[in-house]
Length: 151
Image (cartoon, rainbow, N blue to C red; front, side, top):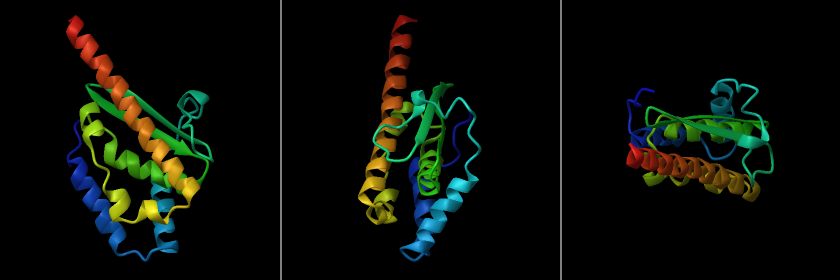
């Protein structure tokens, strides 16, 4: 897997810039929906209980695979707003090392007022998505460290 060309912070600033011209409310939801619509179609294996995110009121799935020391993330949701949130998280975190993901401050969620604009249920779902991606990163980091020690 190739290293992303922009840092996590640079990608977040890009999202902030894109959203800064949008009025709070409908325009931001339309932006999220467009991001979700641009997300590649999920394969059948993704939409299983194994990758389901607990804590989301609607179905959300996120999968992480370690490839060349980087997490390859894929995700999907039945709800268009949630699919957009998945798309943004993947845009920021896909292709990063586990250490980068664990250290990342996801400041775009607050600076775009995205988190504040979501209903409490959707905000809880977003937090669950972030926790799961960080959990995957932690598991992969631990597995990589163990494998390195054994080598």
